[in-house]
Structures are given as C-alpha cells and as structure tokens.
Image 1 (cartoon, rainbow, N blue to C red):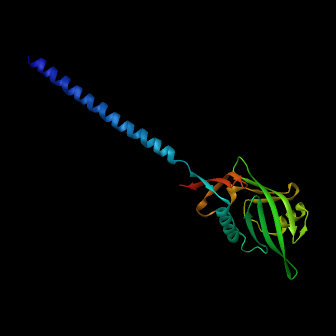
Image 2 (image 1 turned 180 degrees about the horizontal axis):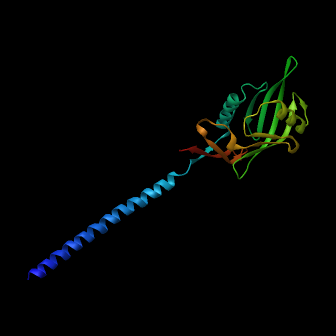
Image 3 (image 1 turned 135 degrees about the vertical axis):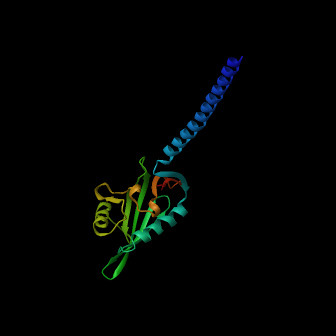
Amino acid sequence: MRNKWKIGFLVLIGINILFAIILLSLVTRSYEDVEQKIVKRQAGEHVSFHVKSNKHDLNKLINHYLEEEAADSPIQYRVLLADEVELYGKIPVFSEELNMKLTFKPKALKNGDLVLTAKAMSLGDLPLPISNVLKFISENYKLPKGVIIRPNDELVYINMQQLKLKSDLKIKADKFDLKHDNIAFTISVPVK
C-alpha cells in the first residue's frame, strides 16, 4: 500500500510541477512576444501624420518660413496661394525698388516633392522671359535648402525632405490642388 500512495504522491507532484512549468512558460513567452513586437514597432525613426490644409493657412505658414529662411536676402518676397502659386517681391535696381511677380502651376510628385512650373513673370508691367529671370534668381539670391531652380525647364523643384524645419520634421506633399483648395501633406516626426 505504501508504494501505491508513494507513487501516486510523486505522480501528483510531477503533474503539479509540469503544470506550473507549462503555465510559467506560457506567461513568459507571450510577454516576450509582445515585448519583441513593441520593440519592432518602435524601431522606426519617424511617426507619420496626415494633414489636410487650405490655402489661407498655408499662405501664413509659407510666408513665415520664408521670413526666417530668407531674412538676409536682398529681395523681399512673399507667396500667395490662389488658383496658382504667385510670388511677389521687390527687386532693388539702383535707387529704386521694382515690383516683381512670378506665377507658377504647382504639382505634387509621388515622392512627396513639389514642382512649380513657371507660367508668367513680370517686372512692373513688363513681361519677362521666364528662363532668364529664373537663371538670374538662382545665380544671385540665397534660396532655402531644398529649393532648386531649373531655368532651362522653367521650373522650381522643391525637395520637401531637404527643407530645414524645426525639430527635424519632414514633410511630403500628397496633394496640391489649389483650384479646389485640396492640399494634403504627410508630416513625419522623429521619435528617436
């Protein structure tokens, strides 16, 4: 009789120990899996937010950015988003300042950059050849990093990833339809 009780007792202890080991392994393994998933999700360097804007708010933002980036430029200019992108400025010529207006058609690219194709340029009421004006601007004035003027193509290429923004934010243009006031961006915020 003693052997049956002894064997039964040892089997019961073995079952309890096996049950405890299985339970412990299930609890710790699922925690490790969750921890690994969290670490994988946090491994990215940026978190993205999709932002929809309008011309009015974007006008304020662009002009504020230009004031900071081009504060030491001899040309004072501002941007107006209407049905097209309009750039207004004053160019110092001798002792006078002449009004300048450039009109562009914007297009958001799949990579998030923005292309502004020049449509018209004028100095006062005098229309000017677009490629010559763009060449003059690119050679003589400081532009924000990421803004590339291509005079021969009569366009301004804005590499949105290279624009210097506070807190290392990155911006991609998703939509830039001014006629329908449909402007959308993806803003990436660093998390490391």
